[in-house]
Amino acid sequence: MDSRKIDRLVQIKDEIAALKSEQDRLENEFLLQAKQDLQDTKYKTTAYVSGSGNKVVATTARSVKITYPSRLRLIFGRAYPDAVTEQTTYKLSAPASRMLAGLWSGEYVEQTLAEAIQSLPVEDKAKKLLAKKLHGINYDGDVRNLQVIGGMDEQQAQEWAYLLQEAAVWDDFRQLLMGAPSGCNDPGHILDLIHGAMVVEETTKIQVVPIQK
Image (cartoon, rainbow, N blue to C red; front, side):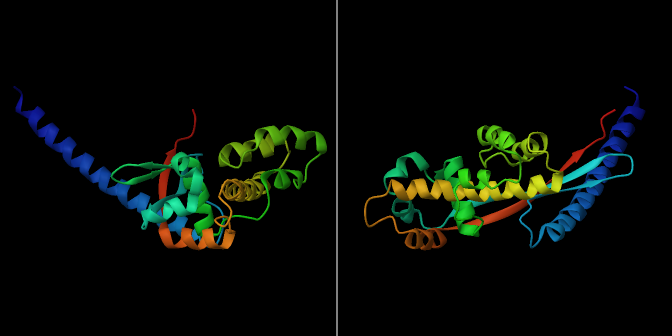
């Protein structure tokens, strides 16, 4: 066995460790910058583009941490079996998690998704088509449809996509209240339960998008 191969493997290992350390440092710089740029905005995503076209995308995600599981039955009422899976820990369905995160964070508007779509500043023909495409769940998809079908620029599409997300949260909340027994459907009371039963944590992740060659 050529002993130079041993030395080369050690060299490669050291280079990988050095590159990983540099990667962590650079990603941390972008994470800090993204938190600063997204602070006090409703945006969850921001991008940084180099002169050569490479891109770094920072995305903030939210997770619901249950602190008082016993209150989940009071929050969801009859919808509890559909929204919650009982395990050693409590696992929320994706729609329930989106709704609770939005309500806990105050990121909702007291407006239905249909009303929000009707208020879009687009032609009636585009509005009818968008009504079938927009659901307030897939943010990137909504932005794309608002640009392609609605003719909006990127910033305008992003702003409306966030409004649609907030309206979708309120839609889900309304459906929850409609299915609750009489006396258990007071919005203020349910919101108080939500704020007392959980916390919502936000984390930001970095995605590196090389230029397409």
